Length: 440
Image (cartoon, rainbow, N blue to C red; front, side):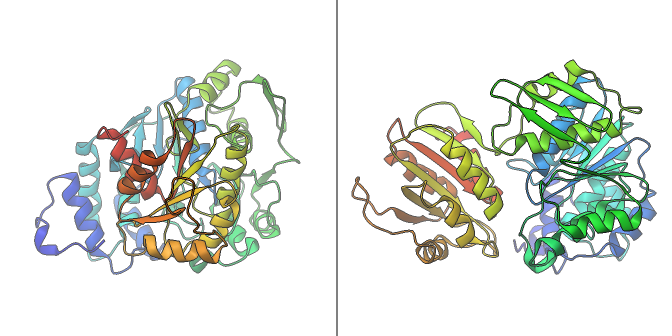
């Protein structure tokens, strides 16, 4: 997003001022490498005096963070969480005790980073990561949970040493930064592991590069199927770890096919930390039931049914397809879909094209986003046929915003149909904002 410097106060006052300034500053949106961030971290004397859990992964990392936060809050711990991106307010990225950070607290940490930055140029993500870590470090917490942004090894979050590092899944995404194979990407994600510390991987088929790196540095690697596992039926499920069992657990309130993989990773991490952060069986059960995370196969009440899901790569799209299949019959499914141009759009569409009858494509307010017209070209290339539907409208339409695409889907869908809003976080956020303003 290009912001003219003349529109930004010389000294930012509000949180919005700060965010506008940071968006305008650095010449690259993504600038991989830790040297600059580490220098500012050292000037800030940034450190945590409590256990740190770090979570990376192609998909599932947000869900895993939310599960850990919910369980640890139920156990009475003061929990700090850094999670991203946000949907409606930047404050969603920093949570203390289950509540979003205030504007005032964030601004104070922004000012602290700015005071120590000197002439070091930081990206929006690097600056805000340092600021949120500074905020959490000041909060006298019992435990900190940090979600990695992109990859792991060179991500700004990786400037701290985690007591437990989790890699939830490894699949193809961000190929221009992380590589074009699971082996290359697995090595990047394994970069959050530390010598002598617990490293958890809940991917059912972990890349050999991840295993080799963990072994090479002397991390204590926990693998799904070897060191921990889960079993279950339709009513409940069980976790088994190296030295701990959790039986008769209710399913996480987050819906979806992969949530037991994420839940098992969370319980493995808590097992590894059980001497420092003991958690009872009842706290685990209530933590899974009471958790809340927007935009992860989130089914909204009412008719037609509306589903929000931030599936933005083929792996996540395959899970979304499976979840849609498990929902029962709906006469027609409408999609509101927007994505970044660098995503594997054909791969995403290939997973979902047989489940969707009508596509409402949307442009998004970022330069690197695909326009509605570009998405339409990709859909046609992926074999979606733009034939008139039973309501005499084309099954592929393009719109300038998620709000307009959603409005069109809503105007056409019958009460027994469903609307699935998916793709970029900005797609889901646009529809969330529209609904918040009273557009149903």
